[in-house]
Length: 506
Image (cartoon, rainbow, N blue to C red; front, side, top):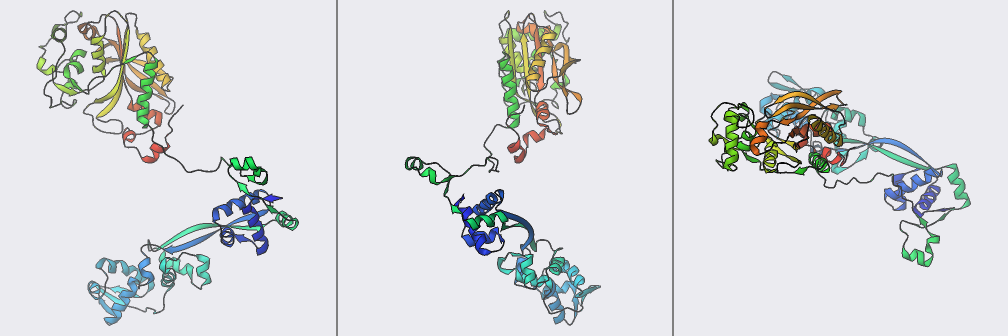
């Protein structure tokens, strides 16, 4: 029977030793690292030729707090010596002056002195009791581990050290000792292994690569090709990858592009005209207050679109213009419309797209990006968050078309159950909230708003067709996809979560 060189060496060494040996002793006797010896023993065990038993033991070494006292006396020894020099007692506050100890060290040592019965506190005095000059078990152990020595508990006990007593004294003193539990494997020949050795075994060279030379010279017949165990643990690699929230943004973008939408963009710093006025939001609306909106100091003003469009929006606000509405019945101020703001919603971008749209042909547009509001920061609100906004311009569009589009979008994002609930929004009629069903919560959750743009929004920009519109939050969607409890965890995520989070989820 033929074996690899390492397997053959292990069998022969165990036979020559005539007794079980540890992996460490085998490796030392063979002059090899423990890794190949361990692998060879595992293969021989699988073949039933050796028996491997495991035992645990404690390994001790000095910790950072204990290292100094391997070569110098413990603080309680220093204080005992000082008390002896002082005639058997001293004021506690005077002890630092007669030793190298700080007041904090003296105060921390009083408990050890009392525990050993070496001294007792009497008022402001420390009185010497009986203190043995012989090293105590903890002192002996500290000295035995001097110089960075690492020893097993069994080795120390074999040297006559009372390890159990020493550990009892040192256990409360953090950082004095480092104790690790190790596992030792012992290998012994089995009956089958002894029988095999009696019949004789031969070593066969094992190779991990089939080289051109082995093929050309026929050497492959004389070697053993090492099998590869693909189930063995391997070192984890953490390549760079897209942030989990960015993957949600990318997926939402891909879904709308697949559905035939055209992506539009707009500036983050937007004029109040596009952010509010074009959406028929009155200039005294609470959403335009400083406590809700970030106004920008520079530039001081924004350029408005052509005067004809601005005039139609002004008239719509003041008297309804040609929309069939009476408007808001107030004097519209151009000076408020050209104030720059950090856009409060991505609808400003779709309004710009609507103004550029050619009347009479269908169109589908969407925008994904950050928006800014003066929100109170909590587990589900940040002053910066992301929306996906969309519009469909089509004379045949209906509320059913809107619901079907939203259902298709969320189904592709992994949420097949969608419903709309009647609601109110200033620039759509009818209006509806969009809700998703979460199996993990057993409940419906609100995700955004939708509806059909009012004529006061569409006619001033030259659109007579129906316009379906929606604005949906993406942070909340990501929280549900990744089971994140607080919105901040998406952006201040831990490295372990970023590394372990799958690149793709079904």
